[in-house]
Every structure is written in C-alpha cells, then in structure tokens.
Image 1 (tube, rainbow, N blue to C red):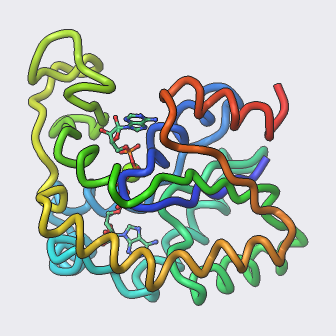
Image 2 (cartoon, rainbow, N blue to C red; image 1 turned 180 degrees about the horizontal axis):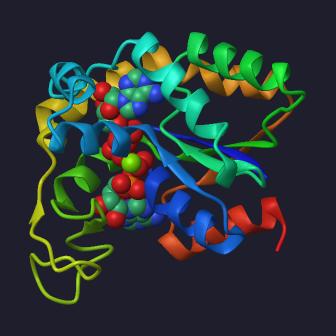
Length: 214
Ligand code: AP5
Ligand code: MG
C-alpha cells in the first residue's frame, strides 16, 4: 500500500504516518525528518536545507525529488510506504507520478488531514521534538511520561526552530500557496481521501483505518 499524507504544517501527518507504518508494517518516509537528520549530522544537504527550513520556506524541488525517488526504490519499500511531507509542490507530485509510472506503479491513497489554520498555531507551540530520535510529543495532547524527557530514548525535548509562532504563520502561507493545490491534483487522480484532523489522535487514526481497510 502506497500512501501520501497531505495536510498543513502541524495537521498531524507525522503522528498518523507513524501509526500507519506500525499497523501496516511499511516504512514511514518523512522528508522533514530526513532533512533534520542531515542537519544534525552536519551534511552538505543538511546545511543547504537548513537555510530554507529556518525561514519557513520549502527546500528547492531538486534537493528533494531524487532523494525520495531513491528511497522508495529501496527493498524495504517493495510492499508499500507512507510518504509524510512529500510531495509538497505540483512539480514534486508530477515527478513522483512519472518516476512511479516508469516502474509500472502508482500511489494508492493521498490522505488529507484537515485542520483549520486557527488550530495550528496552538498545536505547534505545544509540540516538542526529541533531539535524540526525533520522536514528536505535545505538552497537552501527547505528553511524555516524564516532563521534558523522550519516552523512547530518554533524549531531551526541544521546541523545533521552525515552530516559533512567526515562522509557523509563514509555513502556513507557504502551505496554502504551494501545497494545497495538491488536493486538486490527487482529487483528479481519484485517490484523495479527507479526514477530520481536529478530533483526538486515536479517532483520526480510526478514520484512516476505515479508508485503508483493517
Ligand atoms: P516537515 O517536518 O514535514 O514539517 P511540516 O509539514 O511543516 O509538518 P510538521 O512536521 O510540522 O507537522 P505534522 O503534520 O507532521 O504534525 P505532527 O504529527 O508533528 O517539514 C519541515 C520543513 O522541511 C518544511 O518547512 C520545509 O522547509 C522542509 N521540507 C520538508 N519536506 C519538503 C518537501 N517535500 N519539499 C520542500 N521542502 C520540504 O503534529 C503536530 C503537533 O500536534 C504534535 O505535537 C502532535 O503531538 C500534535 N497532534 C497531532 N495530532 C493531533 C490531534 N489529533 N489532536 C491534538 N494534537 C495533535
Ligand atoms: Mg511532521
């Protein structure tokens, strides 16, 4: 099963993608996580990506597309995967469709996690990310057992640089401008499904499972 997660920054794409990956035993591929790992490891790609990410801007398509196409061609993706944060522009979507068509494949579902802008800023200010393993929590909606400490690896939790309110607003503008057109794109492809992302994390997941099948 090949799935794309769509939705505004902070809609819950990553939260739901992890649950989908665990239930259906497929890899979770997050371009944001890949960039953050590269930044942490001080790679050339990380250095380039950081200049855009810190401003709330998208990383240029040419730095993203090959990376994802290579990743989905790896062996562990043979039975499917869940893409989180990619595609994010029409050219990225077209490049993905083309690369898959060359292999005689296509995506099965594009799931839009729908959350209005007014809910987003509040969510982002409460999000905390682990510096060690990248796990994501929320101070109110998905708290850790011990405050400030990752449940998974014991790492320290921080507010992501791009989760400061002024950057979140910029990311929302970029989303409406460059990413929202993908809703039309995947509606035309016949694979768009929408879930209400404002309800509890487990209820959002339940709605997704109903779409994907048990
Ligand atoms: P990326 O890491 O993908 O960030 P994003 O799309 O802005 O999305 P987020 O990760 O912020 O939100 P999410 O939807 O995953 O929400 P989450 O589950 O964490 O990208 C970062 C940057 O990298 C981009 O700005 C760009 O610069 C660059 N980039 C990445 N991919 C790119 C691409 N393809 N092309 C170009 N540039 C690219 O949830 C948010 C919070 O809410 C959490 O705290 C969570 O616990 C909580 N929460 C989740 N669900 C619920 C719920 N139902 N109720 C209450 N709280 C909830
Ligand atoms: Mg995410």
